[in-house]
Image 1 (cartoon, helix red, strand yellow):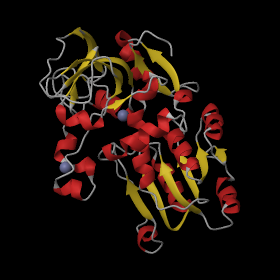
Image 2 (cartoon, helix red, strand yellow; image 1 turned 120 degrees about the vertical axis):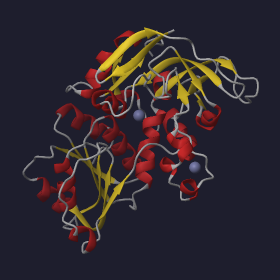
Image 3 (cartoon, helix red, strand yellow; image 1 turned 180 degrees about the vertical axis):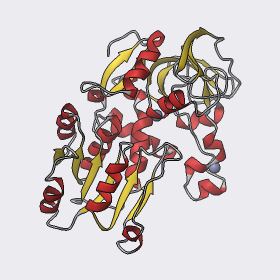
Length: 351
Ligand SMILES: [Zn+2]
Ligand SMILES: [Zn+2]
């Protein structure tokens, strides 16, 4: 089969590799669509993991082989995959810190080499411990919608970190695909979202996704507007969906005492920034983080996406064939005014 193999920093090559063999408790899935995710881009650009690997973990496709011991799935089922599944039994899992679970950290979907998702290949093997995260895609929904379950899951997990009440004001800094999903999910919960981004078309989409206000973060009157909107109280929470330190500083200044700031995009290790710790100690502002997904949210995520209460289709702006995965990654790494979610699409059907 064809696969896009990561061979070193900024080095992705289309190669012919064997179709993965599966065990009795496993599935083989023909990949239809795989989203390009910023965490893969970071690994490709910075070489934070050893090659060779086949990336791509926002995967939807069709089951083509079912292990003899697998129950509940059949050849022909259209499915969305989930590559990180916790054991639900270890010390971390008992604290619901699923992303810290040793099993969770193992990637359970592969197209060969060290497992890394495998979605940039024609077929992937789904290991048995990842079966609890596999979701069937209803007939009326597309592979594209299936491929977005994983990013939506990570966003819903982040939303659950916030102690907010309906009517509260939440800043969402950055209106890329992830920021827009935060905007929509928070708006669905009755929160009033102030969305910021430097790209005008993204602000327009933020309004469509339910933002009460959509503003440039460098607007000189932004603090005054938030002061007025919140009747002088300040923001109840802020979500930082852009890897920009100035956005964190701005949020720290605009959030009320005992408000929360959720870091969602600061994934690069070693980046150090000054923080006035009295804003945490005296003002009781919480700095929180959220990373990756929570498989226990998967049924709720599937309901939101497949019912189109959260319609993810407007997020997808570009599709590339498998052989052009390098171009897909390059575009996702340097978004253009008209680009949001970028997909590698092997389905051959424009859905
Ligand atoms: Zn992802
Ligand atoms: Zn565990």
